[in-house]
Image (cartoon, rainbow, N blue to C red; front, top):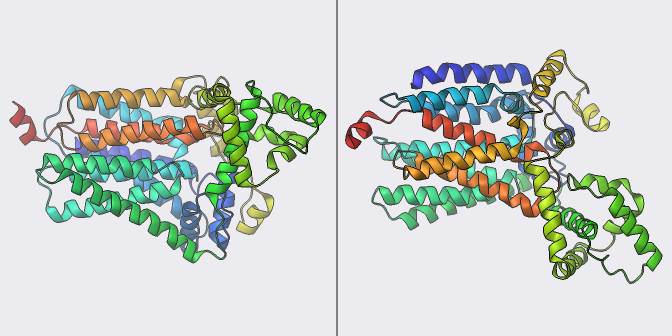
Length: 452
């Protein structure tokens, strides 16, 4: 089964590289590449990916080498998970076929060619839990197991540094390490906490390394993100019936104009629509960050139901959007700020293969493929399957933890989501593929015999 799976997985990886290389670049991608190239980080994105783009760019100009390395995290993990095993049964072949079909869909095929931090986060998460799954396999030497645990900690730490809410990866990874250690007769709590400390240490170390190599101090991305979130929530609460926040210097007429602008421009699909009203933009940007947070708290305490309605609407757009086209289901070609593209030597536009890929993707827009709720549902079903068999096969615990981390990561957007872009939850289809690769591997002969 291992050799059988390796060939098609390798072929699909090469196909994704051939179609996507040197990398599909969006506005955010171009900004991050320029940040890594210059060392001047704006602070609006987690700087780790920008630094990695700059590092690979210094070796081979552009994003081709980065794309190879980032996609390798995903495809090599799938190959390792599916490799080996013993007796083949119908369920293993079913998982293998479903995996290959999923990888051939435009969502997986195209996204692995896009230079997005969401794809990097998903690939790092898959790689980290794949290493934990490999460390559970019987007959592995203590030295190799330690190396795999170290690699898993590194991947988990980098994943946490790639997305602000990515700390769920090392947290659930620590649970998996503890459970696996307990089954091997070791101190579960000590192993789990020790691994978590290692992963968080690597997370902090990566952040400090980026800070040390920056050309200037990096801005506080968390502070910027909270300001955007709180502004969006304030507008959302007003749109759902909450009174306008107190503004002593504003007249009643000014407050009425602001409220009218919110009702006209607010959308649960994304925060960007608020910027279309200049008078509203001035209202949302006034005051300090601390003042904005205090105002947000006052409104939340005064109108909690309006906040719940706003957050529920935003989350619904993320997982089951009424209009997929507003949620950037796919990105192809090169685009970005003209000055950034000129500085990087990039030319905006689409290649013929990009147009063909878009036609392939568009044929799937009316299906569940690009709905995050579909992948979260499959992830939940696979998690239930692993728990139902009590995670008794080597690697089950790690894959269950990956799926649980995916669901926890998705749930966090109910509180912090500001846009419905499909890419934000790309970790869901990536995790489903990892679980299918694991389930496609037959049980080792000694395990099968022991059960019989």
